[in-house]
Image (cartoon, rainbow, N blue to C red; front, side, top):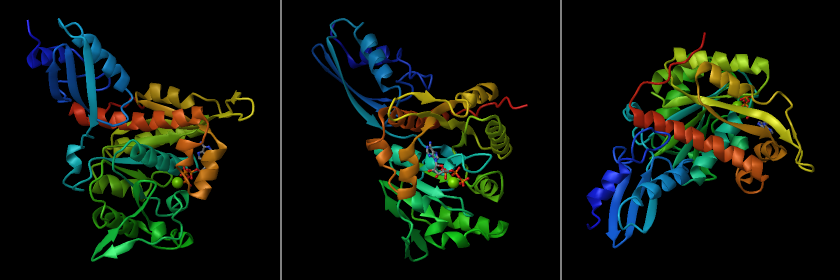
Length: 358
Ligand SMILES: Nc1ncnc2c1ncn2[C@@H]1O[C@H](COP(=O)(O)OP(=O)(O)OP(=O)(O)O)[C@@H](O)[C@H]1O
Ligand SMILES: [Mg+2]
């Protein structure tokens, strides 16, 4: 019996996307089926270019198709199209997803994680913007090496700056950083509205929003003005930091912002000379907090001197190119897990997670 595209399609209905929990055909991920004797050529469209499950999906496709009589070879042409958060389109046309990076307290690495996430996603080949919503203490300009740059204005629109493959906007581009502390509630509201509506973000797969510490006017205004895809909570492993993470979870829950998961920063320190790992603050605390609250654990980031140095020098790409392999893997893991969680939310069409916070 000759192999038909229909038989291939039927077989692919048995291959599940392990994260999205549905088969590749109903997820509309199969874009092309070509048959040449015993060879099958497939066009498969992933929902994130750095999909952490790509190898697993490939293996499952091959296994399923090789059950069909006469199939010798399967060749896959991978493409990616990031799915959009439907409710976001009306508020920010062209922007598919908006992800807030927050924490209950200061100095845990929100801005560092925001920059690494934005640059990491862009390096996987998608369009990314980074909005520094820390209007009180903007640190993104320095972290990306644009401390003394100013954006241009095009009519009543602000053209964002670009660096390291991402588009950027920060109040630090408009005023001296030390003058940025005086905003009152209504001014914060006005500023953020401008950043969302008057900046020429263009087409973006992801807009990453770096929040100031805590639970003040900024997350409130953002949640009211922008139906965000979800929030990522950053915390360090100590007990106090975890209490703060729970506080942040509760805040987002009250604001009706879905929680994409928790990243643990400064999890451990790996000595560059011996490779020995030291769990300075009790590694794994955030994973436990995530399990307890029913929130996805997205990954951990070690304390690494190159992360601190590159933050000060405005050279984030160093962390993807020169840093030790374990740290690079840690970064790619949480970045791709964030994108994975976004895909899950956008493919399920279901409301967000039920948090088990008591
Ligand atoms: N994993 C890490 N390894 C080394 N240094 C780090 C790491 N994460 C953050 N840092 C450093 O810690 C400092 C604080 O980080 P960052 O500014 O990202 O925190 P934040 O939560 O955004 O702070 P704030 O609440 O002030 O906005 C920075 O100097 C940063 O370079
Ligand atoms: Mg910050």
